[in-house]
Length: 308
Image (cartoon, rainbow, N blue to C red; front, side, top):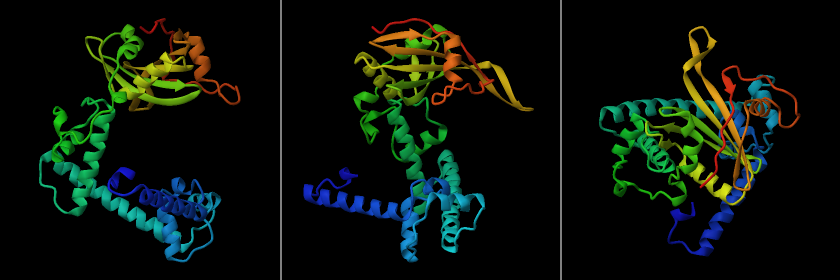
C-alpha cells in the first residue's frame, strides 16, 4: 500500500504504518483468529460493527462455531451484521452477473456499482495475465472482455498497466523435461514442494510441438532457481487422462489422473516408482498411518532426467 502515497515522507509513511498496525491489533483484541473465515465476514467489519454498538466482549472462535452449528443463537447484533453482509454480497453477485453479460455483449457499463464490478473483473484478468507471463491461454472470454473494457490489449504490451517481472517469465526447460515424454496435447498439474513445504501448483498444457503453456511460470522459474541452488524437495506431476472417466455417481464423472513424482537434491532429480508414489500419496505425513487411496488416480513410475 505504501506505493499509493508516493509523495509522503518517510516519517508520514511510518506513522501511517503504525496506525494500521494499531488498528489491526485492536481488531484482533475484539475478534479472535478464525472467526472471519467461519462467519465469512471480515475481521475489521465485525470489529467496526462491535464498536458502533459498544460491544466490548470479544468474539471467540468457540462462540462463532456454536453460532454456525446452531448450538447457540447468535446475538442480535451479529445476526444483523451477517444479514447485512449477505444482502450486500447477493446484491453485488447480481451486479457482477449483469456486468459480465454486458461486457460479453459489448454493452455500455453505467453507474458506480457496475463500474466497480467491471473494474474488479478487469483487475483480476490483468493479474492473471501478469502471473501467466503474458499468456492468454488461461483467460476466459469474460476476462478478455473485461480487459478490452479497461483498454488493455493482451497482444499489445504497451497497453498493459504493468510490467511482468523477470521472475514471472517462462523458463520452460524443466517443465518440458517433466512433461515431454508423455507426448503432445495433454494437460498436467505440477505441484512443487521445497524444503518440506508445498510452494504451489501450476496447470500446464503441452502443445503439438511439445512446447508448454504454463499457468504460473513464476512457480516453475522459482523451482529451477531453487534446484540450481541445491535445495531439497519434490515434484508431483498429475496428468489428466480424458480417455477414462471415474463415475462419482450416475450421470457425473471426472477424468482419471496419472500421478508421477520426483525427489530432488544436490541439483539431481530422482524418479519415483509407482509403488513409492502410492506410499507417499496415501500415508498420513504426521501419523504414518495409511489413508484411503483416490480411486480416480493411478500412480505410475517416472523417468530419469538431468538439468542442463
